[in-house]
Amino acid sequence: MRILVTGGKGQLGVALQHALSRHEVRAPGHGELDVTSAGAVSEAIELFRPQIVIHAAASTDTAVAERDPATALTVNGEGAGNVARACAAAGVPIAYVSSNEVFDGEKGAPYDEDDATHAINEYGRSKLAGEEAVREAGGDFYIVRTSWLYGPGRASFPEKIIERAQADGALRGVTDEIASPTWTVDLAAALAKLVSSGRFGLYHLAGKGGCSRKEWAEEVLRRAGIDVPVEAVQQADFGLPYRKPADSTLANHRAAELGITLRPWREALAGHMRTPDGPVRRAVPDLQDRLLAQIPHHLVFREVGAAGRHPTVPVHRHRLPQPIARVVDRPVRTRGVESRVIHRAGPAVRPEGVPLVDGQTIEASLEVRGDDRLGTHPELLFP
Ligand SMILES: NC(=O)c1ccc[n+]([C@@H]2O[C@H](COP(=O)([O-])OP(=O)(O)OC[C@H]3O[C@@H](n4cnc5c(N)ncnc54)[C@H](OP(=O)(O)O)[C@@H]3O)[C@@H](O)[C@H]2O)c1
Image (cartoon, rainbow, N blue to C red; front, side, top):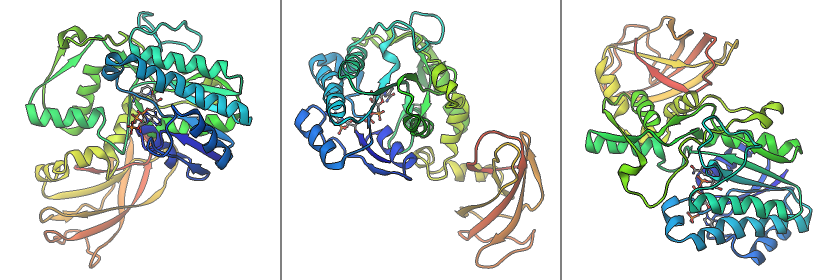
């Protein structure tokens, strides 16, 4: 399929390019395609002749939208209208990415696709205006509401929490803002499936479940091994000129009927934190060293396998930060997953028990047996 992605340099735009790599994708950034220019949008569609346009461009800063609601409306409302009308004129469906902030958060339960919208801040109003513009354009559309995006490519909530915890040694976390953290990797994969379905309409695609900002921060810190307390605070304690919905957790009913689901938010966060060269590892360059320092004598590689499969996976290259006494070469069982190093290679293949020297690179393959459903992200484990 030929797919045009607006906002191609944004968090979601980058994840979409990975998820759609089997397709012919054009993903211009803001500088290459400004969606507030109806002419530029039409021209981009005429030239590329996409079979679907995923409209991920937006002005996403709530504080900026509150200060300048007219610009937020121009970008998020009229911009979506420009893309949707150009799509309708060319007979191309649009997938418009919308937001949990079209809801007021007062329902007291997760929002279904059919629930009434009522935005309580300017950003939410502008995203809602985008939804209306897409409906009014008269073409085929998917409207996909999501929430609390984070993922590779830029420092998002998890990285900011880690940085702040390390800098300040203490954090404050809001308890009266609850939503569904959504890994862009999962959302992009779900969007890729949805836009191939031809089942147009309104959908919610967000990480399963919900949590407060405080709970999210605590889970990030727990997974990063950082012991910093998070003090419970309210939105009002920050004195901000806008309010976020109290509980805008999204329930993904319609996509689930098509077999499109996102995993629970904690599992997705675990995947993000384990990404070998991911932003968390980059934000905490000494994380691995610190873990190694805790257990200097054994190094075990582990891959978390998918349900029922016994894959053998090529794995890691690590420059060892210090001498390692030996590579453990026996099955290790953790959380229902059994892992075994079945092959080692470096400058020389070393039998178990032979020390590896400081700075040496080793490479390993793993045999994995287990029923863990966490995915296939490699991580270091210490028995
Ligand atoms: N982030 C979240 O937590 C969240 C939650 C719910 C829904 N969403 C929605 O999900 C979508 C993707 O969000 P994201 O997190 O990927 O946001 P993002 O990282 O801020 O990406 C949005 C991209 O849109 C670009 N953009 C801004 N104004 C534009 C314009 N006039 N023309 C063309 N491009 C423009 C931005 O470029 P510049 O930065 O150069 O201006 C940016 O690269 C958006 O529709 C957003 O409303 C996001």
